[in-house]
Length: 195
Image (cartoon, rainbow, N blue to C red; front, side, top):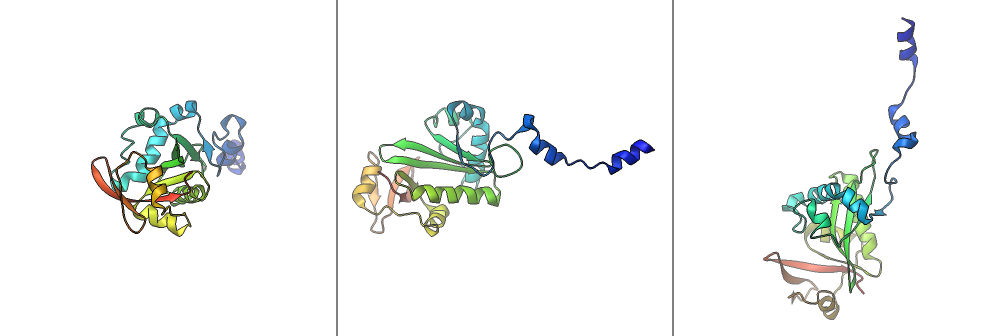
């Protein structure tokens, strides 16, 4: 009987214990974008693929990421930044980019589907696009969101042609252009500040 009384009067917060246990410290600091090295890319390939798959699920997936193997394979030259925003130590959102002669081309986003992770990703993209050397080809809803967040439009036809060198494009009068991706014709716009 005394043991039962002792246990019911004992106050123990498991979350606080796990958060402060030095053996269980978060792998990724909270609310900070962290670039992954090659070893981390390999370790988190499944997580990266899952986050990208979730972000692009409504449009049938991301054309460049068909499996986790693409993280190190076909998309192995991509740089990944991740952020942890909740209580577990895993990444909740990501930004992928590739180095090009025109700067860092933002190539994919990823998130866990939560409103917070979506917001972090879009705000990060909007912030990067305002910096010299970052750019993005975009269309659809994400284009509209980034424009409302002040992402600059690249409207100079010569700069568009320079950035998309080697790609067949049809420029439109409004600064958009059309090009084929994966055999389908898309209308895109270039945002950011390419070199």
